[in-house]
Image (cartoon, rainbow, N blue to C red):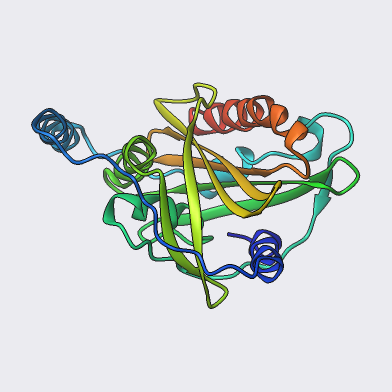
Length: 237
């Protein structure tokens, strides 16, 4: 993800003196799941390829300060191209979600914000895919959120154990999912990223909200809805 998020992870790793161990508790794939997967693949093959979003549509779909509650301001952070690999295949879509660049996607504008006197962080990014790429990407996030409860990956050169929890994201577009990725720093200390992804046609909206304090997590649904609504309107224009 963006530098401020990666910097937060790096700080978290520095604070924590523990060596994290893998604890991905995803359930085993059963016959019903396999059948569902097969059906999803058939549907994807039958669906006509969506036309990629234009640069103008992607720009119009990204949040601005005027779209947010009072107190949020624009932040500036450079883009990085770090990639993450999970130790469990069922968790890889979540690891990919942490990356700024998504393979196969044309990345549109990204806007960063800070709120709560600089304690809360928000990033909204819009991208587009050729063919069924958007469906494949977003559906994989939903599947992973159902099966993956945690994974081990290398962050800033340090092994880290991340916990994954499915979130009830506001409905947006043709498909949307929410997921919380957190790192336990010991005691009451935790670093958590709240994601919301939504798809409309060939376009995808990705929101990541980092509350500065646990109480601020309640703002997730409102922020995700604002982002989703604006993105869908632009994608349909």
